Length: 172
Length: 444
Image 1: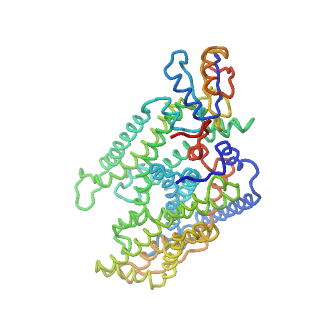
Image 2: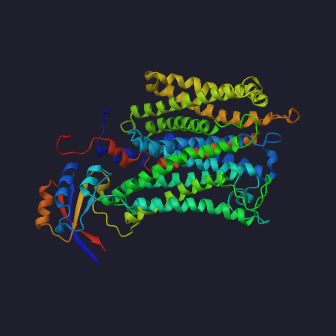
Image 3: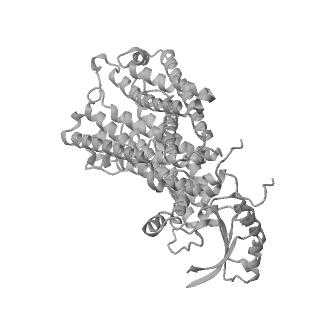
């Protein structure tokens, strides 16, 4: 399935931010996407995305790490108690396991964070369409699906200072 | 601080990605030299593995020699990369945006180099998984989780994995930039490497959140890793090692050696790939200020270590420290003191910080000094312990020296590959600290 839409290319940050403010939440711009060469905070504010759910990935990953970091040495110690220093079997050296717990918290927390970034950013995506190669360099762009260049929405995009307006097709 | 930029956001991709095309001929010369060093190292390692550990100079009472020195040295080098990329990110230090990528790459390759040394040191490396990983051996015995050596395995492997993820995730948008510039087969490769990153506002939003969390996780990690390495020493009862100052002392030393290594690497890269407009003199100067700060901390640690050895009234401890300063290995001690504490003092002067050739020379000296610091710590406590009858002598064999040269070659070999095929400066991050592309004059 392929559909098409209109891509408006902007040269300047303030222009794209102004347009984003205007079209935010409007039903006739549903599904629009903004492209930016880097993570300008102005765009993030104008987008109004709220708090990213990546934090829940980090939390769950980190807690899994803490628990497994204590469970792993405890199980090993249970399987083969090391009876040293007059300790009987069944006494566990918890302070020594803090280090394992700490390291695994960081490890699994970091892996889960990466997973969160990938899942929430919908990548890897082999079908992704590169709308305009300049958006990873120094240009900004707004893509609105399902409209054509003569529509009222395209006029709004153009009036915001777009340097270029064109129709592009996207894969599935 | 407002900085003067001679470049604009539009110059970034063209300027930074110049490295993908035709590097300076010196680049290939350096690459081949480092490759030859790797071959030397591999040859020495193969010889040692074939004939046994007798090929190395380590023998009773000194069972930790140059290999462990190299291990601690290379782990330490890695620390500045994470410090710059994670801790300075949390502090919002703008200069880190230009140097972070190169510093992180340095971390990765340094930790990989460090990871080789325990394997080289154990001799029969095919048995290493049994003492490294929680795998039961033939007697169904697990690893000893109370041993700092096992903590070390967890710390170093976590450090390598997290640094790698942090570095790679930071590079994804830049790899997408390369993908959008090249054609054909290269485009396919960089397209796969960049995961199909498109730079949508939502992707950036989640990316920023995740990057912050990674930085927050990497910060305690970097402080913990060298602390754990220092416990390899401090958890023993050996005089000269068994001190509580070791963790902060090691972390400061690690960051000192790492920062000077960052400077040592950045100056030639900046010249070779013409990055003067991006890595400005201000950024290099900030790196030197950080080196100076950690040098002072290290100097303080050296001083307090001596003071406590004397003040504790422990005879063995004081004997070791006296022997470090005036004994048979005092050359290493004074090299370390001069290189790490005295020579960096020139950076109190702004004129010296701005003088790149002199600063480069001193930065190399700091690297030398930090290597000798580890050598001094490993050696002096082992040659003379509690029982004079077991005192001994150590000097590295040619095989050990060959493997050490090989490790430097190995580090630079990978670093050069990185310099040729990847963006050395984080393009998406440098765009953030440059003047924003505005159609109107900026209003606050």
